[in-house]
Image 1 (cartoon, rainbow, N blue to C red):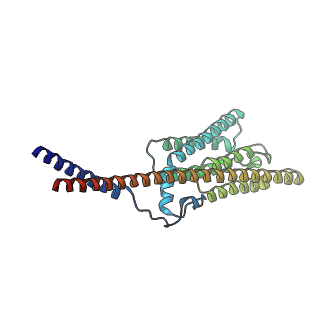
Image 2: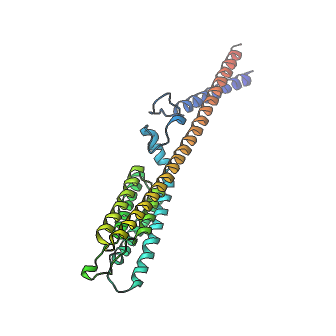
Length: 283
């Protein structure tokens, strides 16, 4: 009889311990969100930034590794392009040109940024600073690829209006598709590159006026095309990433909710079992 009473008391104590643990798990598992209540996450617009600061911060941390990989890809493209152009310029002849000095320097800068970015632990703010520096040096690289004419002082032969077009178009598309910057900043970057090339070409290249204007119109069409295509790719990519983040967050939230419900059911069952054991022990 004593052993049976001890078993009953042991079951009661274990049930109370399980009850306390489950209550603690239910209370500490969920964190209160500061997002607007009553608004389902599926209705939040997948645009350039979430209105909820907490949700935007979660997305930045969630997307950090992907953005780091994308930045490394962009820097790899810029390194390959700058190094290839530097070798071509050095082998082209003894003439002194702007690209001959610009491309090796930018190649070293891009390699340095690649090394800094390729670390295991990188914060969101650090990545944003690296991306901004990459965008800045990409602009200087593109600007110095424009057809500057220094033939009057004998430094380089006369340039043609098509010079630097494919470099600027490639850099523009890389900024849209690979660099994780704000969409507005990418648009400003693409427009500034296009305007810079058009102004430098119009003021530096000495060819027939009719031919020059035809070339300028053709260049403008090409810049407009690459900006529109890059913007289209960026919007689709951004929306897909944010939609995937929302879906993953919804799945995690639903799973946590189900676990909480299961724990509450176990808590209720344990409490009922404990009360039943207590009643039997009194009887």
